[in-house]
Length: 111
Length: 116
Image (cartoon, rainbow over all chains, first blue to last red; front, side):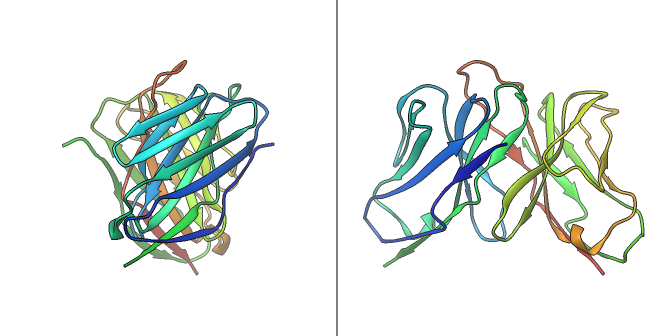
């Protein structure tokens, strides 16, 4: 079976830095993705890590440690518009096309 | 504009009345997928398709059917809807990634279904 764990909610203030963690237990591992979803909207892709290390895309960075079955999404210089839910997702190596999502972390950014 | 479209966006129906939710993408993607989203459970994959006439079950396929007769379309069929299928449904598409190549799934706007 597959399971991904994320904190259910994180709060922060504008301008701050926040880290959203994701630990996974999967029979195989192909890569870890992150998606953002605003209330009432569709998930949108943020980043993808297949190899260990840090990937940076503007204010957002994502990290992966395959030996620890762990990754995180780092959001810097938080803005009010970053208030949303963030999902990590793993693709199982055997069922390559099957994408398993975590239950999501709701980020609340306050002024 | 590259997009995934779904119809209808909102639907109220009754138990047992067959319905179809359409999904179409204009990006020539091989891979398409259906998810349902429920509070506290995140996104769960229902079915996916690697290409025309190639479909497979995701994690929660019971009560659903799909077909992939054309590359751009991937309809979700509920033959006999039940109240536990009340949910928010998303269709998604992507290229078939591989290795360390980045994979991006593009999601449709969602279909909110209520089964009475």
